[in-house]
Image 1 (cartoon, one colour):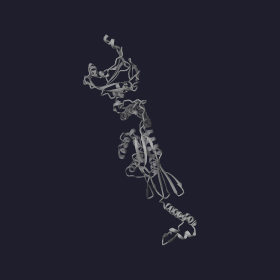
Image 2 (cartoon, rainbow, N blue to C red; image 1 turned 30 degrees about the vertical axis):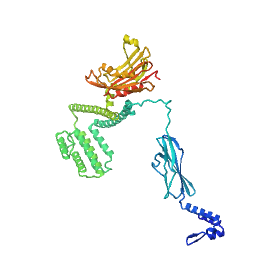
Image 3 (cartoon, rainbow, N blue to C red; image 1 turned 60 degrees about the horizontal axis):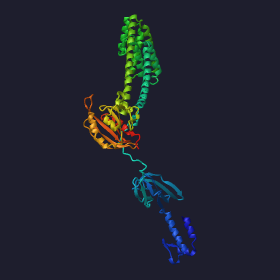
Length: 571
């Protein structure tokens, strides 16, 4: 800036420089002697002073279109040019009312020397037609406030050609089964497979452990005791400073062996009680052990008691020596025990068989319980996902549910033909016309599935006249109550409305409720009914559906059948 001012000062003539003097911070200008060139220089000086002070900024706003259709976007672009040292704050939120902001883009920044050019875009829309004004938007540049211009837009309706686009009656709401419950077999497979795999893994892991334990149990007491001593050596308890655990396992190994071979209360006896018992066995001749072995064994047991209860820690050499003493005691005790008699061997064999049978029964019980647990978990998961009623109906069975899940059949019935999709083929009902009816009617056909007192009842009736006849559907509505009363129904309510199929066949829908006596339960059964009546192709067509109100699957089946009704030659 200083260099630019110097350049403008240089172009002034000497006489002009004399006129531009500063005295006591006052700019004195002699108006009559200022030349035009001097005045232009002063204007430029003021302009650049203001620019250099950061006050100068430019704010503008544009839109890509002034007319849109309902729901279309308007791209609103806001551009700000300001000094690089200034902070620029754009509007945020719903400040464009009555238009709605659906997207706010990031600021696009470009640099031009010491100035920045900032561009921000907004996506606006409106869902009502009319003329609207986008209000002025406030932009902060440093501590200065700038406003954009307001902009006018026009929103047009979407034109629909009703001569080409058919208008249909609004269909009633239909409950749709959730997608994840539509194929229960698939879900059962996906749920049961992981459970079965987990059960199998757990079974084999426990089985392996049990087999290893059972193999050890099947070993004779002496081999089991030696194997236990080897495991103590491999555990490195002494190196881990676990003297208590080391001596506990050491004394338990000796006690278990004596418990099985000599004295069956060795495990719960104190050291003194056990030694006393061994002395008695030696005196009676049942055990041929010398006094020195008994004393060594007693000493090791006392040391073990001190390690377990008094936290004594013998040195490693003494501990390993005590281990050798226990092995010698077990070995000498084995040799000191007299050979069993034949009666004792037989008794022992019987005992082993009884133990094996008990274990076998336990395996069967635990296996059965495991299977029941897997089944219970599967059922509970299914009940949680699909609901109790669906699981119960799937396992026990439900006649209407089976109809809903069956492969449906689409067929044309009667003449003029009525096309309808049903879970079962409708059976032709033999109907003999009277002579009077034959003079009027060319044909009268009825097709039926189910009964009025069952869970579901479907009837398709078609009548063809000999001569062109105009059927008054209003009279058909009036005769609905009488026709149901002839079938034994009571408390019949009737409502009617105009109806049109997807193919364009127009008719009258009659619907309501009725009660009929169920011959099996001897109770009044509450039913809903739907009846479609058409007068197409010179004839009369009627579709009737009656179903139990309390049947949770029947309503969906009825609605599906009604939606499938079509008259082949309807225009």
